[in-house]
Image 1 (cartoon, rainbow, N blue to C red):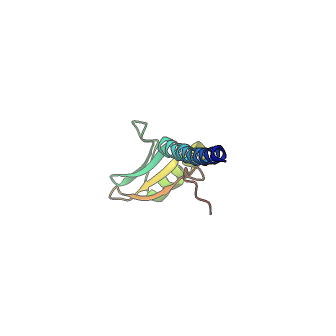
Image 2: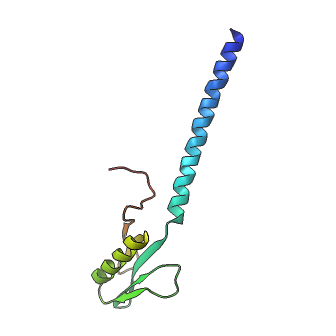
Image 3: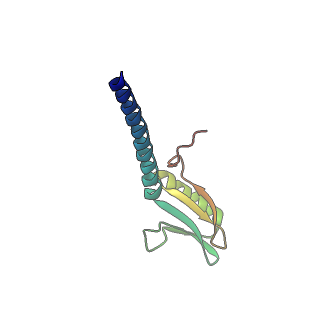
Length: 108
């Protein structure tokens, strides 16, 4: 009887440890997906707007209007699976969209 209780306690302990390890692994996957997601920016550039990947030295496209830049950047981001970040005229972030490649596991 005593040995059975020890075995049961040990099994419950292992179950708890396994659950915690799986949670850690899931969180690690989330962090890796989030921080490895490539980005594309729509940013003000004087009176124009540029579409630029931060990994590149030069802008991919320079547009006259923000709307035109958003349209071009949206197509690029969709095709390449990038997160699109659209800045306001003052340089702060106005919009973000990952086009279905959102690393967060939120449904709905």
